[in-house]
Image (cartoon, rainbow, N blue to C red; front, side, top):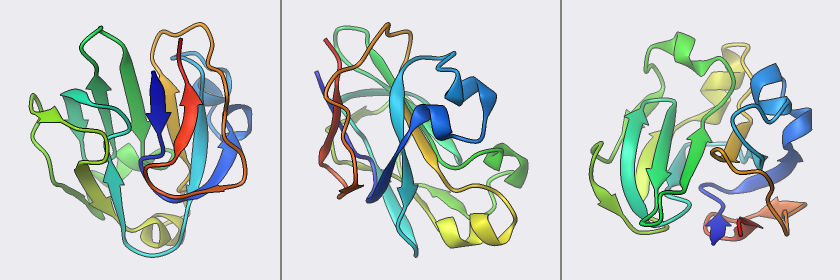
Length: 145
């Protein structure tokens, strides 16, 4: 399975994310994306069911049962949804590239939080072909066998 970038930005190694749970790959391997400045649409990285949608994070589960977590910023749950707009409904079917959340990473940074976005293959043991450098929304960022 190919996992696509849910937003545009610069790829960051998961180990460099300023959160021990993500940096330690405790929920699974993946990469993170430091988003471009400005209001940003965040899209589904794979096709499947939106099994969980919060203003700051969501999980898409594909037909084979593999889930991908997209987390918008670090400690952003503390914002109680401020600065985020959910565009999709939990339980709905999405195609890769469908809009899920809109947010402004600059507002997150202005609040003193990291806007880096971990994209994690839940419960996976490994990923392959991790992207590097800058990516556009929809670009392949890793593969999951």
